[in-house]
Image (cartoon, rainbow, N blue to C red; front, side):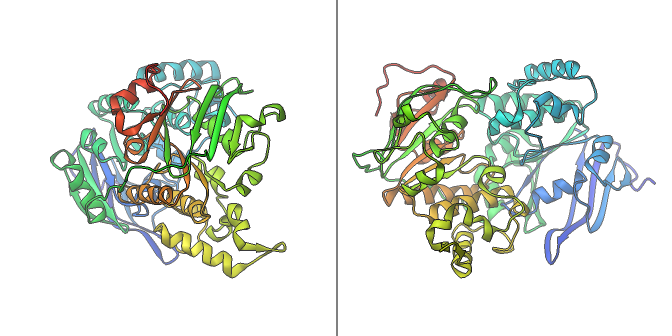
Length: 512
Protein backbone atom coordinates (compact mmCIF):
# COMPACT_ATOMS: atom_id res chain seq x y z
CA UNK A 1 0.00 0.00 0.00
CA UNK A 2 1.35 3.43 -0.94
CA UNK A 3 1.77 5.61 2.12
CA UNK A 4 3.28 8.74 0.61
CA UNK A 5 1.97 10.92 -2.09
CA UNK A 6 4.28 12.54 -3.83
CA UNK A 7 7.89 12.96 -4.34
CA UNK A 8 9.29 10.42 -6.83
CA UNK A 9 12.83 11.23 -5.67
CA UNK A 10 12.08 10.21 -2.07
CA UNK A 11 13.70 6.82 -1.46
CA UNK A 12 13.60 6.15 2.29
CA UNK A 13 11.60 7.45 5.23
CA UNK A 14 11.88 6.47 8.88
CA UNK A 15 8.90 7.40 11.03
CA UNK A 16 9.30 7.32 14.82
CA UNK A 17 11.63 4.31 14.71
CA UNK A 18 12.37 3.04 18.22
CA UNK A 19 14.57 0.14 19.28
CA UNK A 20 14.95 -1.09 22.87
CA UNK A 21 17.22 -3.63 24.53
CA UNK A 22 15.45 -4.36 27.79
CA UNK A 23 15.13 -1.00 29.55
CA UNK A 24 17.84 0.59 27.38
CA UNK A 25 16.52 2.69 24.48
CA UNK A 26 19.05 2.60 21.63
CA UNK A 27 16.88 4.53 19.14
CA UNK A 28 14.12 6.80 20.39
CA UNK A 29 11.50 7.97 17.89
CA UNK A 30 13.92 8.56 15.01
CA UNK A 31 12.59 10.37 11.92
CA UNK A 32 14.68 10.57 8.76
CA UNK A 33 14.14 11.12 5.03
CA UNK A 34 16.54 10.32 2.22
CA UNK A 35 16.25 11.21 -1.45
CA UNK A 36 17.73 9.38 -4.42
CA UNK A 37 21.37 10.35 -4.87
CA UNK A 38 21.59 12.04 -1.47
CA UNK A 39 24.63 11.33 0.71
CA UNK A 40 23.58 11.83 4.33
CA UNK A 41 26.04 11.65 7.22
CA UNK A 42 24.89 10.14 10.51
CA UNK A 43 26.83 11.89 13.27
CA UNK A 44 27.07 11.04 16.94
CA UNK A 45 29.30 9.86 19.75
CA UNK A 46 30.06 6.19 20.31
CA UNK A 47 26.91 4.62 21.68
CA UNK A 48 24.60 7.31 20.26
CA UNK A 49 22.61 4.69 18.34
CA UNK A 50 24.07 5.09 14.83
CA UNK A 51 24.93 1.46 14.17
CA UNK A 52 21.69 0.27 15.77
CA UNK A 53 19.71 2.45 13.37
CA UNK A 54 21.66 1.21 10.35
CA UNK A 55 21.16 -2.43 11.38
CA UNK A 56 17.42 -1.78 11.62
CA UNK A 57 17.33 -0.36 8.09
CA UNK A 58 19.36 -3.35 6.85
CA UNK A 59 17.09 -5.91 8.53
CA UNK A 60 19.54 -7.30 11.06
CA UNK A 61 17.14 -6.28 13.82
CA UNK A 62 13.52 -5.19 13.90
CA UNK A 63 12.20 -1.92 15.31
CA UNK A 64 9.96 -2.10 18.37
CA UNK A 65 7.97 0.88 17.14
CA UNK A 66 7.75 3.00 14.01
CA UNK A 67 7.68 2.49 10.26
CA UNK A 68 10.13 2.14 7.38
CA UNK A 69 8.87 3.56 4.08
CA UNK A 70 10.72 2.47 0.92
CA UNK A 71 9.85 4.09 -2.41
CA UNK A 72 6.52 5.15 -0.94
CA UNK A 73 5.60 1.72 0.42
CA UNK A 74 5.60 0.65 4.05
CA UNK A 75 7.96 -2.35 4.26
CA UNK A 76 9.02 -4.88 6.87
CA UNK A 77 12.75 -5.40 6.45
CA UNK A 78 12.89 -8.72 8.26
CA UNK A 79 16.37 -9.82 7.20
CA UNK A 80 19.45 -8.66 5.27
CA UNK A 81 18.30 -10.74 2.29
CA UNK A 82 15.04 -8.78 2.22
CA UNK A 83 17.08 -5.56 2.38
CA UNK A 84 19.33 -6.66 -0.48
CA UNK A 85 16.30 -7.58 -2.60
CA UNK A 86 14.93 -4.07 -2.02
CA UNK A 87 18.27 -2.61 -3.10
CA UNK A 88 19.84 -1.83 0.29
CA UNK A 89 23.50 -2.71 0.80
CA UNK A 90 25.69 -2.24 3.87
CA UNK A 91 29.43 -2.07 4.54
CA UNK A 92 29.92 -3.06 8.17
CA UNK A 93 32.32 -1.64 10.70
CA UNK A 94 32.68 -5.11 12.24
CA UNK A 95 33.30 -7.32 9.25
CA UNK A 96 30.92 -10.11 8.25
CA UNK A 97 33.40 -12.36 6.46
CA UNK A 98 34.13 -16.06 6.95
CA UNK A 99 37.84 -16.31 7.73
CA UNK A 100 38.41 -19.90 6.58
CA UNK A 101 37.50 -19.31 2.92
CA UNK A 102 38.75 -17.00 0.19
CA UNK A 103 37.63 -13.54 -0.80
CA UNK A 104 35.80 -14.76 -3.90
CA UNK A 105 34.09 -17.55 -1.94
CA UNK A 106 32.86 -15.01 0.61
CA UNK A 107 31.46 -12.77 -2.11
CA UNK A 108 29.78 -15.74 -3.82
CA UNK A 109 27.56 -16.16 -0.75
CA UNK A 110 25.61 -13.00 -1.64
CA UNK A 111 26.47 -12.32 -5.30
CA UNK A 112 25.42 -14.83 -8.01
CA UNK A 113 27.92 -16.25 -10.49
CA UNK A 114 30.60 -18.91 -10.80
CA UNK A 115 33.82 -18.45 -8.87
CA UNK A 116 35.89 -17.66 -12.02
CA UNK A 117 33.28 -15.11 -13.15
CA UNK A 118 33.17 -13.49 -9.74
CA UNK A 119 36.96 -13.41 -9.44
CA UNK A 120 37.21 -11.49 -12.70
CA UNK A 121 34.38 -9.17 -11.63
CA UNK A 122 36.16 -8.51 -8.33
CA UNK A 123 39.37 -7.59 -10.17
CA UNK A 124 37.46 -5.21 -12.43
CA UNK A 125 35.70 -3.55 -9.50
CA UNK A 126 38.98 -3.31 -7.59
CA UNK A 127 40.64 -1.56 -10.54
CA UNK A 128 37.67 0.73 -11.09
CA UNK A 129 37.49 1.82 -7.46
CA UNK A 130 41.21 1.83 -6.68
CA UNK A 131 40.85 -0.85 -3.99
CA UNK A 132 43.63 -3.43 -3.93
CA UNK A 133 41.90 -6.81 -3.42
CA UNK A 134 43.11 -10.28 -4.41
CA UNK A 135 40.03 -12.50 -4.98
CA UNK A 136 42.02 -15.68 -4.30
CA UNK A 137 43.40 -14.54 -0.92
CA UNK A 138 42.28 -16.36 2.22
CA UNK A 139 40.42 -13.95 4.50
CA UNK A 140 42.20 -15.15 7.66
CA UNK A 141 45.47 -13.81 6.26
CA UNK A 142 44.15 -10.33 5.46
CA UNK A 143 44.72 -7.24 7.56
CA UNK A 144 41.82 -5.17 8.86
CA UNK A 145 42.25 -2.68 6.02
CA UNK A 146 42.25 -5.40 3.39
CA UNK A 147 39.11 -6.97 4.86
CA UNK A 148 37.38 -3.63 4.74
CA UNK A 149 38.16 -3.33 1.03
CA UNK A 150 36.54 -6.74 0.51
CA UNK A 151 33.40 -5.57 2.34
CA UNK A 152 33.19 -2.45 0.18
CA UNK A 153 33.62 -4.32 -3.10
CA UNK A 154 31.12 -7.04 -2.11
CA UNK A 155 28.53 -4.38 -1.38
CA UNK A 156 29.15 -2.44 -4.60
CA UNK A 157 28.86 -5.63 -6.67
CA UNK A 158 25.22 -5.88 -5.58
CA UNK A 159 24.36 -2.59 -7.38
CA UNK A 160 22.47 -1.08 -4.43
CA UNK A 161 19.96 1.79 -4.54
CA UNK A 162 20.86 2.67 -0.95
CA UNK A 163 24.37 2.13 0.35
CA UNK A 164 24.96 2.16 4.11
CA UNK A 165 28.60 2.76 5.00
CA UNK A 166 29.73 2.35 8.63
CA UNK A 167 33.24 3.83 9.00
CA UNK A 168 34.26 2.80 5.45
CA UNK A 169 37.53 4.76 5.40
CA UNK A 170 38.75 4.04 8.92
CA UNK A 171 41.76 2.04 7.70
CA UNK A 172 42.19 3.40 4.17
CA UNK A 173 45.16 5.63 3.24
CA UNK A 174 44.44 9.19 2.04
CA UNK A 175 44.85 8.47 -1.68
CA UNK A 176 42.49 5.48 -1.48
CA UNK A 177 39.94 7.60 0.39
CA UNK A 178 39.82 10.09 -2.47
CA UNK A 179 39.51 7.26 -5.00
CA UNK A 180 36.63 5.82 -3.00
CA UNK A 181 34.99 9.23 -2.76
CA UNK A 182 35.23 9.59 -6.53
CA UNK A 183 33.34 6.32 -6.86
CA UNK A 184 30.73 7.33 -4.29
CA UNK A 185 30.12 10.61 -6.09
CA UNK A 186 29.61 8.74 -9.37
CA UNK A 187 27.12 6.44 -7.65
CA UNK A 188 25.34 9.47 -6.22
CA UNK A 189 25.12 11.02 -9.67
CA UNK A 190 23.45 7.80 -10.84
CA UNK A 191 20.81 8.11 -8.11
CA UNK A 192 22.30 5.83 -5.45
CA UNK A 193 21.58 7.24 -1.99
CA UNK A 194 23.97 6.77 0.94
CA UNK A 195 23.88 6.81 4.71
CA UNK A 196 27.42 7.51 5.82
CA UNK A 197 28.76 6.99 9.35
CA UNK A 198 32.21 8.43 10.01
CA UNK A 199 34.08 10.20 12.78
CA UNK A 200 36.31 11.91 10.22
CA UNK A 201 34.63 15.28 10.05
CA UNK A 202 36.66 16.66 7.16
CA UNK A 203 35.56 13.68 5.07
CA UNK A 204 31.93 14.38 5.91
CA UNK A 205 32.33 18.02 4.90
CA UNK A 206 33.97 16.93 1.64
CA UNK A 207 31.50 14.19 0.67
CA UNK A 208 28.09 14.55 2.27
CA UNK A 209 25.11 16.68 1.23
CA UNK A 210 23.45 16.62 4.65
CA UNK A 211 24.04 15.44 8.20
CA UNK A 212 21.75 14.12 10.93
CA UNK A 213 22.99 14.27 14.52
CA UNK A 214 22.09 11.52 17.01
CA UNK A 215 22.58 11.90 20.74
CA UNK A 216 21.46 9.21 23.19
CA UNK A 217 19.35 7.61 20.48
CA UNK A 218 17.45 10.77 19.49
CA UNK A 219 17.79 13.05 16.49
CA UNK A 220 19.00 16.34 17.98
CA UNK A 221 19.74 18.28 14.81
CA UNK A 222 20.36 18.40 11.09
CA UNK A 223 22.78 20.52 9.09
CA UNK A 224 24.48 21.00 5.75
CA UNK A 225 28.06 19.92 6.54
CA UNK A 226 29.45 21.91 3.63
CA UNK A 227 28.34 25.10 5.37
CA UNK A 228 29.86 24.10 8.71
CA UNK A 229 33.41 23.76 9.98
CA UNK A 230 34.73 20.56 11.53
CA UNK A 231 34.62 22.34 14.89
CA UNK A 232 30.94 23.16 14.31
CA UNK A 233 30.17 19.51 13.54
CA UNK A 234 32.08 18.34 16.60
CA UNK A 235 30.11 20.68 18.84
CA UNK A 236 26.87 19.30 17.40
CA UNK A 237 28.07 15.76 18.17
CA UNK A 238 29.59 16.10 21.63
CA UNK A 239 28.38 19.48 22.84
CA UNK A 240 31.86 20.96 23.22
CA UNK A 241 35.05 21.79 21.33
CA UNK A 242 37.42 18.92 20.50
CA UNK A 243 40.38 18.81 22.88
CA UNK A 244 43.83 17.97 21.54
CA UNK A 245 46.49 15.91 23.28
CA UNK A 246 48.95 17.95 25.33
CA UNK A 247 52.25 16.64 24.09
CA UNK A 248 55.49 17.94 25.54
CA UNK A 249 58.79 16.79 24.08
CA UNK A 250 59.70 13.25 25.07
CA UNK A 251 62.51 12.47 27.49
CA UNK A 252 63.24 8.83 26.70
CA UNK A 253 65.65 6.65 28.64
CA UNK A 254 68.80 5.41 26.98
CA UNK A 255 68.22 1.69 27.43
CA UNK A 256 65.71 0.15 24.99
CA UNK A 257 62.44 -1.37 26.10
CA UNK A 258 61.97 -3.04 22.70
CA UNK A 259 64.74 -3.84 20.25
CA UNK A 260 64.17 -5.46 16.87
CA UNK A 261 67.26 -6.42 14.88
CA UNK A 262 67.34 -7.52 11.22
CA UNK A 263 63.97 -9.24 11.55
CA UNK A 264 62.89 -11.06 8.39
CA UNK A 265 59.88 -13.34 8.20
CA UNK A 266 58.62 -15.31 5.23
CA UNK A 267 54.89 -15.69 5.71
CA UNK A 268 53.82 -19.30 4.99
CA UNK A 269 50.55 -17.95 3.62
CA UNK A 270 51.34 -16.94 0.01
CA UNK A 271 48.82 -14.09 0.35
CA UNK A 272 50.12 -12.99 3.75
CA UNK A 273 52.47 -10.17 4.70
CA UNK A 274 56.19 -10.89 4.99
CA UNK A 275 58.93 -8.79 6.60
CA UNK A 276 62.29 -7.83 5.16
CA UNK A 277 65.17 -6.96 7.51
CA UNK A 278 63.18 -4.84 9.99
CA UNK A 279 65.12 -3.05 12.72
CA UNK A 280 63.97 -0.53 15.32
CA UNK A 281 64.26 0.54 18.95
CA UNK A 282 61.58 1.84 21.33
CA UNK A 283 62.73 3.41 24.59
CA UNK A 284 60.90 4.07 27.87
CA UNK A 285 59.28 7.48 27.84
CA UNK A 286 58.61 7.81 24.11
CA UNK A 287 55.91 7.03 21.56
CA UNK A 288 57.18 5.55 18.31
CA UNK A 289 54.62 5.58 15.51
CA UNK A 290 54.58 3.24 12.51
CA UNK A 291 52.70 4.66 9.53
CA UNK A 292 51.83 2.87 6.31
CA UNK A 293 49.07 1.72 4.01
CA UNK A 294 47.24 -1.33 5.37
CA UNK A 295 48.67 -4.64 4.18
CA UNK A 296 52.35 -3.67 4.05
CA UNK A 297 53.48 -5.85 6.94
CA UNK A 298 52.16 -4.02 9.98
CA UNK A 299 49.86 -6.87 11.00
CA UNK A 300 52.62 -9.46 10.72
CA UNK A 301 55.01 -7.27 12.71
CA UNK A 302 52.43 -6.80 15.48
CA UNK A 303 51.83 -10.55 15.72
CA UNK A 304 55.56 -11.26 15.89
CA UNK A 305 56.05 -8.67 18.62
CA UNK A 306 53.08 -9.87 20.68
CA UNK A 307 54.07 -13.54 20.46
CA UNK A 308 51.16 -14.72 18.34
CA UNK A 309 53.82 -15.76 15.81
CA UNK A 310 57.00 -17.22 17.30
CA UNK A 311 60.48 -17.26 15.78
CA UNK A 312 62.86 -20.21 15.72
CA UNK A 313 65.04 -20.61 18.80
CA UNK A 314 68.17 -19.75 16.79
CA UNK A 315 66.91 -16.25 15.98
CA UNK A 316 64.97 -15.52 19.18
CA UNK A 317 67.28 -12.58 19.93
CA UNK A 318 65.99 -10.67 16.89
CA UNK A 319 63.24 -9.43 19.24
CA UNK A 320 64.30 -8.29 22.71
CA UNK A 321 62.15 -6.87 25.51
CA UNK A 322 64.24 -5.17 28.20
CA UNK A 323 67.36 -7.01 27.01
CA UNK A 324 65.63 -10.41 27.15
CA UNK A 325 65.34 -12.39 23.87
CA UNK A 326 61.64 -13.15 23.43
CA UNK A 327 61.25 -14.13 19.77
CA UNK A 328 60.56 -17.77 20.67
CA UNK A 329 58.46 -17.36 23.82
CA UNK A 330 54.70 -17.17 24.40
CA UNK A 331 52.63 -13.99 24.77
CA UNK A 332 52.19 -14.82 28.45
CA UNK A 333 55.94 -14.83 29.09
CA UNK A 334 56.29 -11.53 27.24
CA UNK A 335 53.54 -10.06 29.41
CA UNK A 336 55.46 -11.11 32.53
CA UNK A 337 58.26 -8.81 31.32
CA UNK A 338 55.81 -5.90 31.26
CA UNK A 339 54.57 -5.96 27.65
CA UNK A 340 50.88 -5.40 26.92
CA UNK A 341 49.30 -5.52 23.47
CA UNK A 342 46.18 -4.06 21.83
CA UNK A 343 45.46 -5.76 18.46
CA UNK A 344 43.64 -4.06 15.61
CA UNK A 345 40.80 -6.64 15.68
CA UNK A 346 39.15 -5.89 19.01
CA UNK A 347 36.12 -8.18 18.56
CA UNK A 348 38.00 -11.26 17.39
CA UNK A 349 41.42 -11.10 19.03
CA UNK A 350 41.12 -8.66 21.93
CA UNK A 351 37.86 -9.92 23.43
CA UNK A 352 35.55 -12.94 23.46
CA UNK A 353 32.36 -11.51 21.91
CA UNK A 354 29.83 -13.56 23.91
CA UNK A 355 31.49 -13.00 27.31
CA UNK A 356 30.78 -10.12 29.69
CA UNK A 357 33.14 -7.19 30.08
CA UNK A 358 33.87 -8.43 33.59
CA UNK A 359 35.00 -11.81 32.29
CA UNK A 360 36.89 -10.24 29.40
CA UNK A 361 39.21 -8.41 31.79
CA UNK A 362 40.45 -11.82 32.95
CA UNK A 363 41.92 -12.56 29.51
CA UNK A 364 44.95 -10.36 30.11
CA UNK A 365 44.54 -9.01 33.68
CA UNK A 366 44.32 -12.28 35.58
CA UNK A 367 47.89 -11.78 36.83
CA UNK A 368 47.03 -8.37 38.28
CA UNK A 369 45.63 -9.83 41.50
CA UNK A 370 42.35 -10.98 39.92
CA UNK A 371 43.18 -14.66 40.44
CA UNK A 372 44.71 -16.23 43.55
CA UNK A 373 45.61 -19.92 43.87
CA UNK A 374 43.56 -20.70 40.79
CA UNK A 375 40.40 -19.00 42.08
CA UNK A 376 38.90 -15.82 40.65
CA UNK A 377 38.63 -13.00 43.18
CA UNK A 378 35.22 -11.74 42.08
CA UNK A 379 35.24 -8.44 43.96
CA UNK A 380 38.72 -7.55 42.64
CA UNK A 381 37.60 -8.57 39.15
CA UNK A 382 34.48 -6.41 39.42
CA UNK A 383 36.46 -3.42 40.68
CA UNK A 384 38.97 -3.74 37.84
CA UNK A 385 36.19 -3.93 35.23
CA UNK A 386 34.35 -0.97 36.79
CA UNK A 387 37.52 1.14 36.81
CA UNK A 388 38.20 0.23 33.19
CA UNK A 389 34.69 1.28 32.19
CA UNK A 390 34.71 4.53 34.17
CA UNK A 391 38.26 5.64 33.35
CA UNK A 392 37.67 5.27 29.60
CA UNK A 393 34.03 6.47 29.60
CA UNK A 394 32.86 3.18 28.09
CA UNK A 395 29.18 3.60 27.23
CA UNK A 396 27.59 0.33 28.31
CA UNK A 397 25.11 -1.12 30.78
CA UNK A 398 27.93 -1.99 33.16
CA UNK A 399 30.45 -4.77 33.64
CA UNK A 400 27.85 -7.47 32.95
CA UNK A 401 27.33 -6.19 29.38
CA UNK A 402 28.26 -8.71 26.69
CA UNK A 403 31.26 -7.51 24.67
CA UNK A 404 29.51 -7.86 21.32
CA UNK A 405 26.66 -5.61 22.53
CA UNK A 406 28.96 -2.56 22.66
CA UNK A 407 29.49 -0.23 19.75
CA UNK A 408 32.85 -0.65 18.06
CA UNK A 409 34.27 2.54 19.54
CA UNK A 410 33.20 1.67 23.09
CA UNK A 411 34.67 -1.82 22.82
CA UNK A 412 37.93 -0.26 21.60
CA UNK A 413 37.99 2.06 24.61
CA UNK A 414 37.39 -0.91 26.91
CA UNK A 415 40.28 -2.92 25.46
CA UNK A 416 42.65 0.06 25.67
CA UNK A 417 41.56 0.76 29.23
CA UNK A 418 42.16 -2.84 30.26
CA UNK A 419 45.75 -2.78 28.98
CA UNK A 420 46.53 0.70 30.33
CA UNK A 421 45.28 -0.26 33.81
CA UNK A 422 47.88 -3.03 33.86
CA UNK A 423 50.53 -0.26 34.04
CA UNK A 424 52.70 -1.74 31.30
CA UNK A 425 56.40 -1.08 30.89
CA UNK A 426 55.94 -1.54 27.12
CA UNK A 427 52.65 -1.07 25.24
CA UNK A 428 52.18 -2.14 21.62
CA UNK A 429 48.92 -0.80 20.17
CA UNK A 430 47.48 -1.18 16.67
CA UNK A 431 44.93 1.34 15.33
CA UNK A 432 44.17 2.82 18.78
CA UNK A 433 41.32 5.10 17.67
CA UNK A 434 39.79 3.06 14.84
CA UNK A 435 36.03 3.68 14.90
CA UNK A 436 36.18 6.04 17.90
CA UNK A 437 34.38 9.39 17.82
CA UNK A 438 36.39 12.60 17.77
CA UNK A 439 35.97 13.41 21.45
CA UNK A 440 36.86 9.89 22.59
CA UNK A 441 39.82 9.77 20.18
CA UNK A 442 41.26 12.89 21.78
CA UNK A 443 40.83 11.30 25.21
CA UNK A 444 42.55 8.07 24.10
CA UNK A 445 45.49 9.96 22.63
CA UNK A 446 45.88 11.95 25.83
CA UNK A 447 45.85 8.70 27.82
CA UNK A 448 48.69 7.38 25.66
CA UNK A 449 50.70 10.58 26.11
CA UNK A 450 50.10 10.48 29.87
CA UNK A 451 51.22 6.83 29.95
CA UNK A 452 54.36 7.78 28.04
CA UNK A 453 55.08 10.46 30.60
CA UNK A 454 55.08 7.84 33.38
CA UNK A 455 58.00 6.13 31.62
CA UNK A 456 56.17 3.54 29.54
CA UNK A 457 57.54 2.76 26.09
CA UNK A 458 54.81 2.84 23.44
CA UNK A 459 54.86 1.47 19.90
CA UNK A 460 51.79 2.68 17.99
CA UNK A 461 50.83 1.23 14.60
CA UNK A 462 48.33 3.54 12.93
CA UNK A 463 47.06 4.38 9.47
CA UNK A 464 45.78 7.76 10.69
CA UNK A 465 48.45 10.27 9.71
CA UNK A 466 46.84 12.93 11.88
CA UNK A 467 47.18 10.60 14.86
CA UNK A 468 50.76 9.67 13.99
CA UNK A 469 51.76 13.32 13.96
CA UNK A 470 49.70 14.35 16.96
CA UNK A 471 51.31 12.06 19.54
CA UNK A 472 54.37 10.31 18.03
CA UNK A 473 57.86 11.37 19.04
CA UNK A 474 59.52 9.39 16.27
CA UNK A 475 58.02 7.94 13.10
CA UNK A 476 58.81 4.88 10.97
CA UNK A 477 57.00 3.95 7.76
CA UNK A 478 56.30 0.41 6.52
CA UNK A 479 56.18 -0.41 2.82
CA UNK A 480 56.16 -3.92 1.32
CA UNK A 481 57.55 -5.43 4.52
CA UNK A 482 60.40 -2.94 4.85
CA UNK A 483 60.69 -0.39 7.65
CA UNK A 484 62.14 3.05 7.04
CA UNK A 485 64.66 4.66 9.32
CA UNK A 486 62.95 6.62 12.07
CA UNK A 487 62.57 10.39 11.82
CA UNK A 488 61.67 12.93 14.46
CA UNK A 489 57.97 13.74 14.11
CA UNK A 490 58.67 17.45 14.42
CA UNK A 491 61.18 17.38 11.56
CA UNK A 492 58.98 16.02 8.75
CA UNK A 493 55.68 16.93 7.09
CA UNK A 494 52.64 14.81 6.26
CA UNK A 495 53.70 15.06 2.61
CA UNK A 496 57.12 13.60 3.47
CA UNK A 497 55.53 10.66 5.27
CA UNK A 498 52.98 10.24 2.47
CA UNK A 499 55.80 9.78 -0.05
CA UNK A 500 57.45 7.26 2.25
CA UNK A 501 54.15 5.37 2.45
CA UNK A 502 54.41 4.92 -1.31
CA UNK A 503 57.92 3.46 -0.97
CA UNK A 504 59.97 6.63 -1.55
CA UNK A 505 62.22 6.16 1.47
CA UNK A 506 64.68 9.04 1.66
CA UNK A 507 68.03 7.39 2.12
CA UNK A 508 69.44 10.67 3.45
CA UNK A 509 67.12 10.47 6.46
CA UNK A 510 69.13 9.01 9.30
CA UNK A 511 67.65 7.10 12.19
CA UNK A 512 66.70 9.47 14.98
